[in-house]
Length: 516
Image (cartoon, rainbow, N blue to C red; front, top):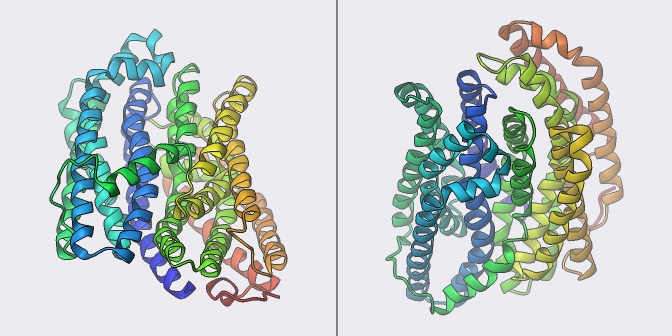
């Protein structure tokens, strides 16, 4: 089982890695051309709102509700019934998204006031955000339908298509930054049009692959279809489940809108960097295991269900913990090397560094949330993650209120990480309490080996990174060379630490009763 999961995860992770690399290029371009000014604050909000809704509805609640129902259809229904269900889902989803998109365009000023109330007192930043939100909001329609197509492809083990699709978003935004932005009186508006075009391109890209597997839908609006009603019923509570981290990030934007100019941008860039390990590993593994968990649940294979979660948790911690150490220990060198160009100056590096180091604390918990929540969604239990999600969201708001005054934007990032820790712990507690997940033997030794390797890694990075002021003052080539060497030796030292502690590949790739 784990070999098959590992192969699928490797495919998704590889495609996601390509997307994240293009994402880095995109961030380097936008940082160089626009920096962390008021105009980029406005764009960050205008892009984050439809992007947030996409993650909340399309990749969050919809995917978590749709994939288990579709997997059950594949087990129990005829091919014709499956196609009818997909067609009804496509038409109904498309109609709802169209209505939401029209509403978002019309109500753009009120939406900006809701999600970035601090902008309302600054006419120019508020007006720019409203204009760009009206341009970017249709992205929600196209990218949600793209997520729908990707969910179908994933249930047919065509994982690479959906994982590769975001590359087109990054390419379109890079092209827009260079070629569209200079043609507008307010250049940042060109970047918003890049988002709009990217939604259409991603939507078109996946349809030929659906046709190839014979699952190209014939859309029909059918709210009363039994399968559609089940998905819609499961979607409502799922909104507050695995997507709660996205709600917390949007709350971060709300609080940051009251801080000094640049705060929204500093949080945006640090969040973008944090999403690299989260997307490559956390999202990749959760994407792969959900169809497997759903099939195990449909077949009542409880032991396989538990072992799949166990395998996923080990893989996530194996990568998530060192990622957190790296982002916490060398956030300054990373930001200086990747983003310190053009309008993104040394001050922007120092300020973004504060929030990135706080976000780093939440990298492993964010990954764990993806895995643990999938265990509930595969069993079509939406209530438990909802309750936990609401608790975590309230905690995030309380942490924000407490930490924003002494730590400013870094306090917002720390609040998000603390709420993620709380969320992941409660998800684990209830999975274990309900006997859905029973950890297999060997976790004590596995945990010791992980701790040993990560402590060694942290010590190396602490002494090897040097003074941040040295990084921001040196030319780009010097930063690139030194960061490359630092990361290379960090990887070697981490895996050497795992090896010396006794961890072997078979301990993760092959489920065993004993890991000594």
